[in-house]
Image 1 (tube, rainbow, N blue to C red):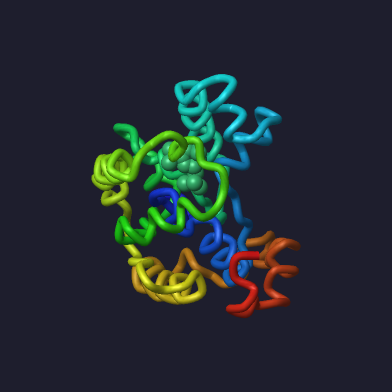
Image 2: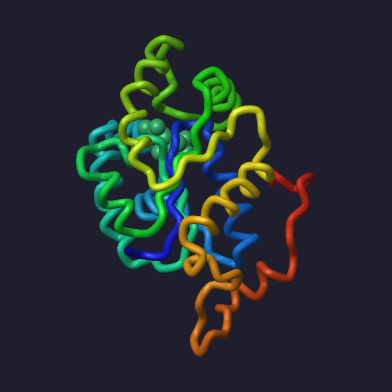
Amino acid sequence: MGDNVILVGFMGAGKSSVGRLLARRLGRCFVETDDMITAHEGRSIPEIFAQRGEAHFRALEEETVRLLALKSGDVIATGGGLPCRDGRPEALRALGTMVWLRGDFDAVYERAQRAGARPMLAGRGRDEIEALYRAREPYYRQADLTVDTTSINADQVVSKLLLALRDRSPSTLSPLGRGPQGKPPPEARRADQRIPSVSEEGK
Ligand code: S3P
């Protein structure tokens, strides 16, 4: 099994803010699958959906999962739909510890509406989005760990997650990652010099 931490969950679950904070705490690199896709395509996620359609975006996600096999020791935030294909949870678990950031639908829905342009929400009513959420739950549920995020902020989620990760696999969580000869990689040293405060959350 790989030694990455892979965050999954519905849109609005807090994968980006929690992932960024967790990576800083651990001195790890932070990777977002949506960023890998936009960098590869040279256009935004809404543009990809509008110009090439959802099927093309899902094919890009498939390719992204293959590329993730090259990652080691990273914190990886996945797009909300990425784990939701047969065989995907298994593929993600092979990369490291798969963590579901779970939230009650109402809380997640409210957060998802608030932030960012999300093509999967556009033109869909609340009931339709709840149906999508319910259809995805069985995939998310296959994560190694589940952290409930309802009514707590990203900083509190990270604290819970660190405890759960330490209980489950203490050796994968060396605070500075694994540089050559035990030295942390440069980005880990930089990240470790500064522990973010709660007020920085969401930056
Ligand atoms: C999607 C979620 C988005 C992004 C794309 C599709 C989905 O990521 O990958 O718009 O199908 O749920 P976030 O979960 O970060 O919003």
